[in-house]
Length: 239
Image (tube, rainbow, N blue to C red; front, side, top):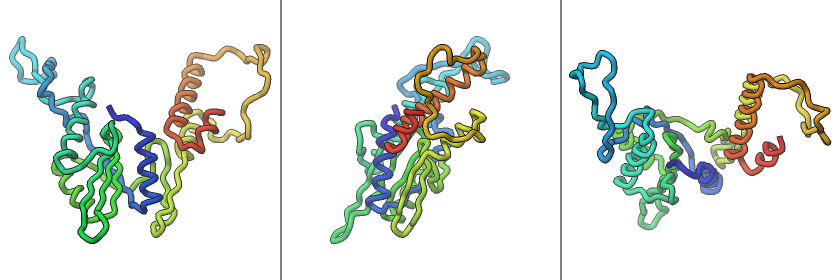
């Protein structure tokens, strides 16, 4: 239900770099609890010590974590809010929302939001318009807001706030992966592949723990490749 994370990242980076748009980030607290279950009949056993008559169950009115319907119902709440507040979706997945306020004889006031599950990036040309959004949005959702240091595995560095020179890399993601693999003190090499490997080069059989560690390493590299920038795709793929 929350699609095109690569598109979200690319659109936001383009906006920051080419349109000189400041960027900030918000996180919706306990996001999946906002969904309403008006069109879904779901029942649960009452929790221990809950004052419920014997032989009865509880009819859920709102989503809880663990429900298959929770992500969809949460997204419906977010989409409904944006539509009710004069935003227009910029993509089919309805993850990027734009509000444009015309200014007679001047440049339009523009506010862009890019949502990935409960994380939302904000790009704006008019700080007053962003503050207006923030005040209104907080009336509907509890959020935590701040600057952007990383998004979808990419570190975001604003090198110059006057010219909004922005760079992105996956250094922190890969350094964290090396720590998890206990390889932070390993010696780096340019090409870790050994040519012409054969069965005679195989070492002793791996333990279950080593198998699990290997699968985690491969999966983490695949995630890094999927969320990475074009410049890092080849490096991670080769690794």
